[in-house]
Length: 422
Image (tube, rainbow, N blue to C red; front, side, top):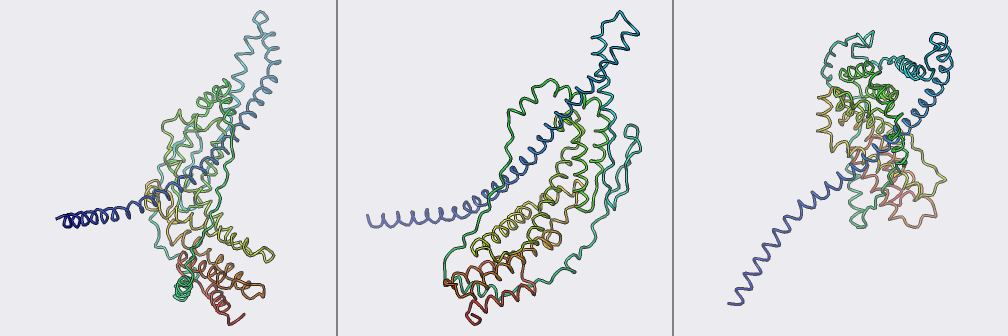
């Protein structure tokens, strides 16, 4: 009897163990997804903080210039006001007249600004009113449906190379060392003194300047509201130009957020989405340009050169992964707001330029290792060869294959690594 009880208890424990193991796998997967989401959100927060700090710095400079100009303007008008009052009404005190006239002069000066017309997309009919105050913008015509894209027709032919995967697997079976990927350090966010912000907000001149903007710039802001609401672009580069124009116009306000808070009709959701799309596209384009213009320095030590290439590939993969993970929800939101979204597809900027640009990194990496293997000073052939094939396999999977030039470089690395050209 005790033996049967032990066996039944063992079976029960085994079942519990199997259930626990079955639960572990989805939990680990969910945990990994949450870690990736946290890293993406941290990167987004860092980017927004940097952008916010830039705008706060601009605000501080503009406020200082505004206070200086107001003070200078008041000092210039004061003598003439005193003279006119003393000549017309000698019995009235001079101080009272000065206080009533100076704000009018400053307010009159602030209403002079006329908004510049926004950059117009090539495919959208201009709707800029001739007069900001009385003009009414016509409702924008919806953009035509996207044309059938054949963007890949003119691109470089990329095809799968089974030989890359075979060599990679044969080498990894001999060496079980795991790939240590280099993590790029995050860009430090410029710190901005909180005490300075508090000092600005506590000043009565700052609050009065906001009130003045709300009252005197009402028609100007209504014009911007119409432009944002009617914005319908077909190309993401046009969105980038439009956001640049919008930021320049809003920078004329003392504090963008504080002033726009008084206008509930401000399309904040669309304005934020336009900025998000423009900044993401700009960062991607900048990274793609950095990768395509990468040049290896032969005088640089081998380890340092390889780390530099790996860091660029890490940044490239992380940027593309962040976009692809959120692509479905983001593209739907962009479609609803008439913001271009096709550039996020594999047939757009992501596939045609960004992924294919990594082939240049693979070529530079393999060339550098092949050169090192051919030198007489190389003493660690196997590990170096594995390192080169591992990176080539990584880029091969990321880009979806190799083009003709990259295949030739890979064949040379294979030839040198197997010892036939040493």
